[in-house]
Image (cartoon, rainbow, N blue to C red; front, side):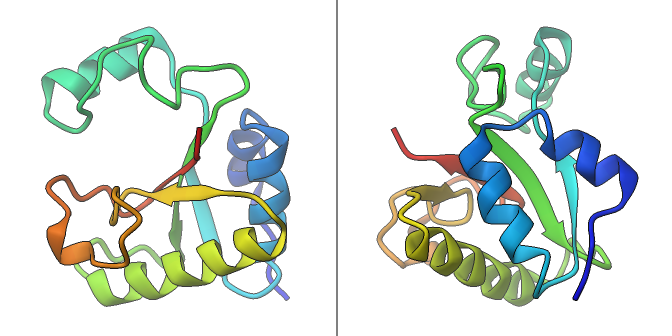
Length: 130
């Protein structure tokens, strides 16, 4: 069984309780790192300017308090391993579904189980569906 490190725990604590429930279950089976929960105005707008986000503050799902989104990735981090990110996402979405929590993954925004149709890949991103 894996456990979150101090920074990951702090970041996850800024997220909606449903996201905390899902990822506190996920960590029992898959080692992963929380990259970001809540995101403030300066950082959100910086990501928008850099093309790392499609929305400005306060329209991002990370901008609510608690955050309705979390960026999390399997550990150790390998940004080039799309297959591993996709397998991780499938595991996360299955855990969430089993808990009755609806999530959307940044590798398949349409929730059509066809990540090839995605026009903006954000593999570490998971958000509560509205």
